[in-house]
Image (cartoon, rainbow, N blue to C red; front, side, top):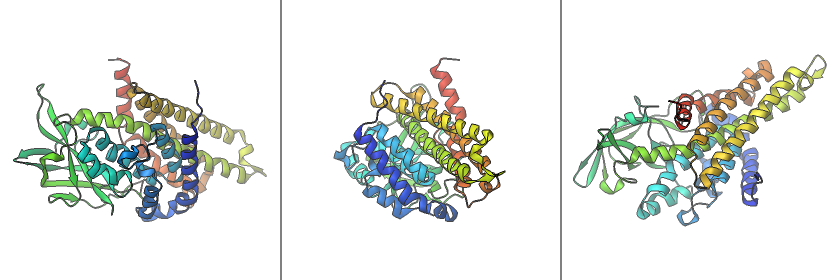
Length: 383
């Protein structure tokens, strides 16, 4: 078993680490305090090829492998989680559906500018009354002539309202399946379409510099050709999308957990109590050791899930495990980081305060921890 990264993977990792240190970390506190979307930074990432990293070159992307994408996300998250989730949601949820299910015409029209970082794209799955119950979609779309008429609402949607948002792909009920269940279809809705209303940005505990909004559709009409993938097969499609997205979120969590460890180790060596650096105290050393152990375990879990995905092997169980463990490990890391900093950790002057606010959503977005445990049990056939 060889864990050696390729030269290309190492290059991407090192490039993103340097970019996070030099460009992201210096502004992370400011954009968090102002809840300010980092437009200039995202545009620069687009020029670097990061916003289309795993998309093939023929569609404007960088053509990197999936593990390279995850490595990049880990490093970007070490700089700031808001920037990382903007990148992850754009690629995993916004762009990847076009690559997997789009027609050649749709790929040229939508995917190319997304992969080149000229636009961002959103994915509208969650609704005010349908979160973990993703099959309980209430948004409806009716075929009227050569158009789909969409009515409904989405909630907690990332990247829908930025200055460069090109649109959203939404799940909508379009009829009934032979088994009596709702037939769900994915529909492409460009920004500016009449009846598509983008709500104001939501006020959040964490990820404050990312764009998160409610969306409403009031007799929103789109052409019949705006179906993405097979009509009525949208549920199966977005479940596949979420599997890979969970591996990417795991990588993001590892980056945030690593940032907690980095700050804690630095602070512990500098902070003195009783005439010694607190890093010399066994109580602090144990905290640091536990953090380092869990960061490494979470990293190896997402490496394995990413590798299985790249080999074309089943990876749903490993994706759920990686996302579950990494998200909970990052929360524990942030909690210990604040504890190591003591009273200073409770102050926004120190990054660990922001890290602590950012970690909680990792246990919620793209499948809650409870949902991951249900999925793992199903894979084990533990019913």
